[in-house]
Image (cartoon, rainbow, N blue to C red; front, side, top):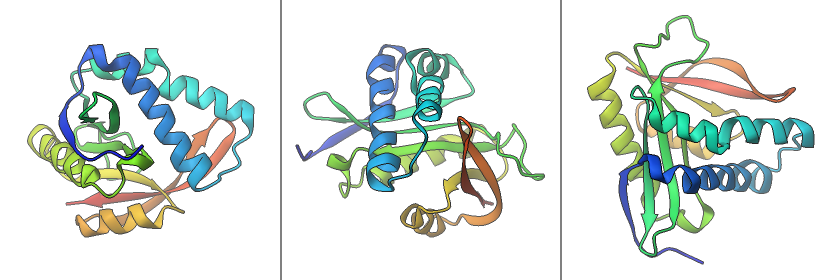
Length: 178
């Protein structure tokens, strides 16, 4: 079911359950359905539990050094989100005092509506105000569309690293702006 309009807001603690479900669904749509990455089932189950489980999402929302925005459809469904906080990327110039875009995902039904642009604007503005210095993000090496979007926002590739999904390792690029 396509979405015709959305509103953007900061996620609140009572969004944790819906946000956990959104994060899991968006990850699966992107990497399992879209890119067809053949994660081993045991590795995938562990990653999904640890990364998108309710306890993890509640902890993110309670952490004052993190911020999450959600896009909400007119019917109340959460359809996209952006999550930011202190940089934790493995790069010699990165530090926790600098900001990182951890995740930005929109469900397929919300693609092409400007949701990603609105989420990036909100997330980057918060990072610019809250954490001095360059902005960082990691992006899967095979996600050329996202890489082009980030390049259009002034990000450049400054490194590579392995992103762990259980024992599986995705090849990721480290991008920096500023």
